[in-house]
Image (tube, rainbow, N blue to C red; front, side):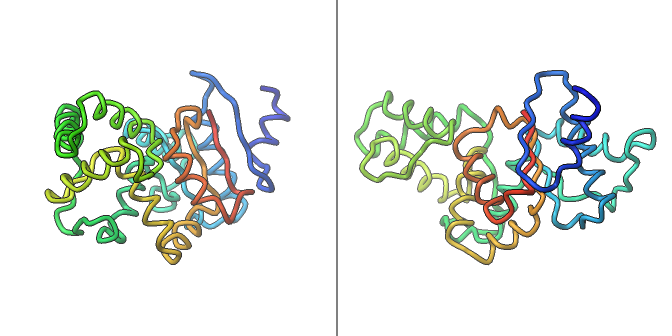
Length: 231
């Protein structure tokens, strides 16, 4: 990438920016540099949100921003940095009753084998087949459950959520789906997180699914010019 093009990318705060970059192209450094430029230009850390994919990537981003020989930003001056799923969990905790969960002892079930078994049970309760449960699970993994009560896969998903809610559980993917539901139903909560994401930076954009795209769209709806994605 030519220097002048790079400078234009990291300093253009007036429009939505999509940066296409392959593996090993320095995406983390680019995002960290963008954060540094925003802060240096007087943008308040409270309106900057950085979304990463996975705990390792999240820690890598924090390390890049804080290391003394790097951008050397004091930890207390960092903006909001989290994985997309962690942000989803934070949003769900704002209004868990909207999705029939309790705030106390709210847990995430991450065991894929348990999830498959519970989907199978949900299908059997509805007199559907195991193949139907697999279709519903595949749909949900990609974040494509359209919440259409007439579709088998959506009926299975709803039955699955009923089973999970009795244990005050949600699964890993639910964190994003439920966060979107809560944001759409609660304008004050949506406004709060939109304010925090007036400058929204997203890593690994090429890997997002439908639900994650929906979350990004909700957060950036009022400040498209602040959206900066790399993938």
